[in-house]
Image (tube, rainbow, N blue to C red; front, side, top):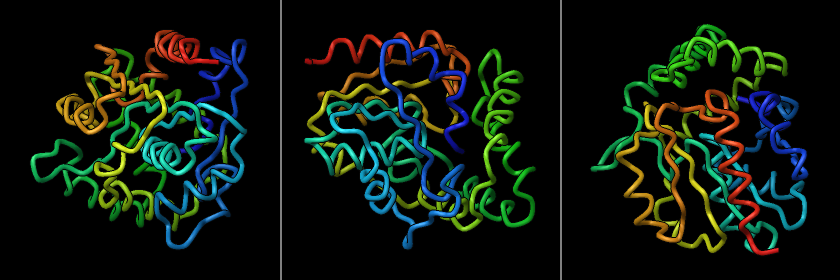
Length: 237
C-alpha cells in the first residue's frame, strides 16, 4: 500500500498533532526508491533519515514491522510507537498464529500475472469480517490508486518480507511507550497472537476493536483516532 490509505484518517489527528506520512520505499511517491536487499532493516534505515526529531511513529501492517525496527534502532529520536493491525511476525508456523504460508505464496504468483486483480483480492481479505467491508474496500482502493503504482520489485519483495521477517527476539528491546491496535475480526493478524506479543514486549498496551478487521482506521476512523490521541496525550512532554 501507500500513504494514500491515511488520506481521510490524518485530518482526524492533524488538529492536535503535526502528522507526517511517509511512503515505504518502492511504494507511492517513493516507488523509484528501492533498496537492495529489500529488508525491514534497510527500509528502517532509509525512513529513519527523513523522520522528524522526537516523533511518535505509527505503522500499519507491513509498515508496523518497519516501525518496530525503527523504535529499536532510534530510541533517542522516536519517543513512542503505535502499530495498527501489525505483529513482529506475520507468517504462521511453529505454534505462532498468522497468515498461512500457502496464501502468501499464491499472492506472490498472482502478482506476476495481474497486479490490479491481485490488489483487489488482497484488499478484500484485509476488510473481511468488518461490518462495512464493501465500503472499506472501495475506500482503500480509491485512496491507494490515487498514487503511483508500486515498483514490481518492491511489491514482490514486500510480500516476501511478510513470510520471512521475524522480529520476535527484537521487540523486547523496544523501550518507548507502545500502543498496539488490533481488529478482532482480522484474518491476517489473528487476536490469538496478542498474548504472545504482550509476553515478548510486556510494557506494550494492546487495544482490540471488536468489530474491526485488518484496517481499523478505515472501518472505525473516529474510534481509532481517539485511541491514538489519548495514547499520545498521556505521554510525558
